[in-house]
Image (cartoon, rainbow, N blue to C red; front, side):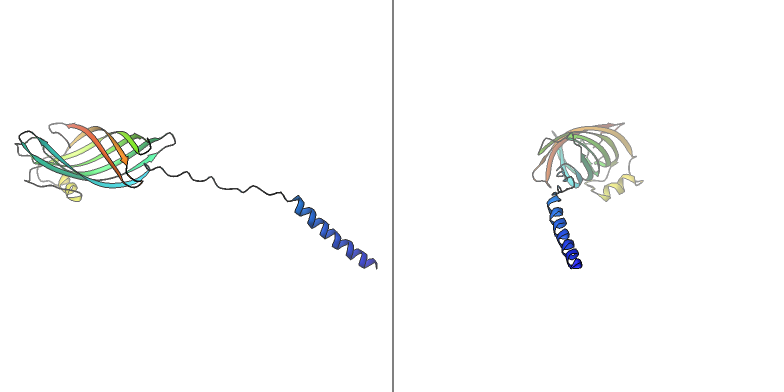
Length: 191
C-alpha cells in the first residue's frame, strides 16, 4: 500500500508540475532579424550604351557613341556616390581638318541625390583621347580602346572634365537620362 501511495503521489506531482510548467510558460516574443530595407533603385551595377550626334551650321552631322559600365551606391541620407568607366568614339567638332574624331576612354566619379524616380547628379573625371584620322571610322567598345593605345595616328592626350545630369527611373531596372559634360585638354577638345 505504501508503494501504491508513493506511486500515486509521484503521478500527482508529475501532473501538477506539468500543469504548473504550462501555466508558467510565457510566450516569448518572436525574434526576427532586422528586415532588410528594400534596396534603392539607384544602387547597383549597371552597363549601357549611348549614341550622340554633333552638328553645327555648315557641317554635316557627326555620329559617335560609347559603351559604359559603373556602380552606384545610395547612402541613408539619399546621397548617391558612383564611379563609371566608358570608351567610345566622338566626332570632331571642326568640319574641315584632318581629324575625323577622337577615340577615347574616360573614368568619372558621380555625386547624386535620390529624389524618388529622379536623380540629379554632378560628375568629374578624366578623359584619355586620341585623334582619329581615318575617314568614317566609328569605333565602339574594344575597338575604341585598341585604337586609343595603338601607335597609329596622333598622340594620346589627357583632359579633365566636369558634368551635370539627371536620370529618371522608368522602371526599377530601366533608367533614362540627360547629361552635359565639358572637357578641355591641351591642344584638343576632348569628348
